Image 1 (cartoon, one colour):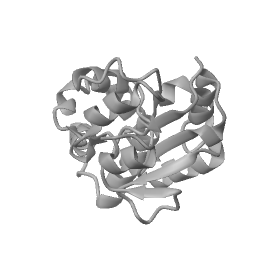
Image 2: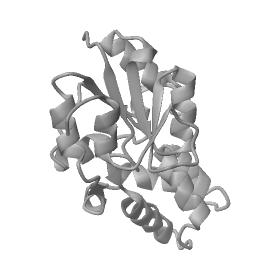
Image 3: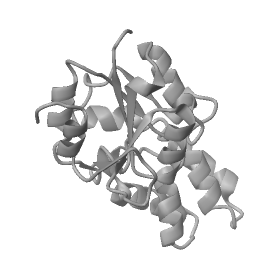
Image 4: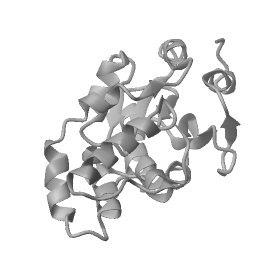
Amino acid sequence: MKKEKAVIFDCDGVMFDSRMANTKFYNHMLRQFGLPPMTPEKMQFVHMHTADESIRYIFKDSPYLEQARRFRAKLDYTPFINDMVMEPGLMDLLKGLQPRFGLAVATNRSNTIGRVIESKGLDGFFDIIVSSLDVENPKPDPESILKILKFFDIESSESFYVGDSTVDQQTARAAGVVFISYKNKSLEADHHVYSMMEIADILGMEY
């Protein structure tokens, strides 16, 4: 699919404020095994990593790791999607970008990303969505970004990745794409923005 430029979005922390949803999801799992809720450190970890990595991390000091993995495979994430809040202006930004840019998502979510996109009314905007299940090496490995670049048949210099975490920063740098840091001034980035409108400005479109 030939596009001159592409904009790639992370999901959690960029398109959605999902900290509440993720916190409730993993604390629900911990309660099933009689364990205390996540510490702030663990909440930060699960915000950036895959579900499998998160479960290994929060259950690493317990005897329930394998049981937790099996439980998570059967657990329906749908009720927790209601606690995900779409970033203001996202829908308008996507509508404005769609005629000119290839649009993609690169996320460390696994089997939940499709339901999130559909339930929030964003299906049809993205040309390709790459989850942790679609690659051998999830972020911060650049495989997800490189897969998107190949899909669009464009160079890394013609691509923008919008992320909010150190994992996203490392992914963007490894892939050689322009990195836009969203609401995180501590990251090394080509641009720092705090709203969807600022992304529109960087990409030279009216908002």
